[in-house]
Amino acid sequence: MLIQTSCPSISKTAYPKDEVECVVILGSWAHDGWEVDIQHGEDLLMSEFENINPRWELIVSKASIFRKVTRYECCSEPYISIHISFPMKRRPVPEIEATRTPCILIMVLALSIFWLPPDSSLKFLLCGLLFFALNILLVYVAGSTKSPLLVGYAVSFIQSAMYIIVTTLFLQVFIITKLCNQSGPSRPPPSVMQFLTGPLGKYACLRSPMSEDQVSLDRVQLKEDSSANEP
Image (cartoon, rainbow, N blue to C red; front, side, top):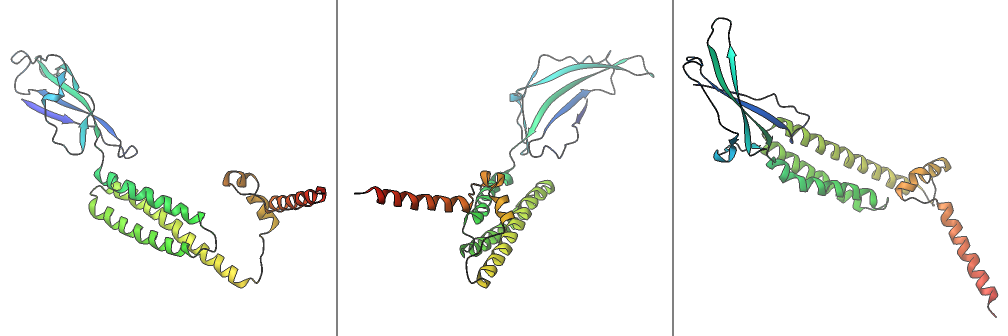
């Protein structure tokens, strides 16, 4: 009895949620179909077998079976084989599950850097802590992950987060340096203010300082009118 197993090549684009369909072929090369007539019943129940593969699991509970009769030019006898096909999917990768929560926390903390005031000294502390945490996460992923593809994805994410944090740190140094060199308050150029408070400001929740000044003037005018109307 000859047993042959074939699975298609795994695509890297769907990792780690890729699915494959493998085929197990049962047949005989020494005996033809006139000597050994292989038959099969209904679908094969996969619950009768134990899956010891830690990386893959079966998608369906029944595997499809079909009988194939092959004839060769050299021989007139038929050769019969049984083909069993069953789809499988990759199990959840433990390394991804272990690093998912730290990655989400690091993303939230990286965004919180932009929510702090420009002259806040907490940005330096937060950037340093995030950079240190990213280095620890990088060492953990590189040491505990055996899949080169998963390591590449993790390094790409951590590298992007490091670029954001370092860029934010340089911007913070530049802002503090500019504030120290100025003696009084200053505003950005009108073109920059118009760009930030235009369509971009609508989605970034930014409001033009001119509108704030107008609101202050309206409040002062309202107070003057109310005081003038009092007896």
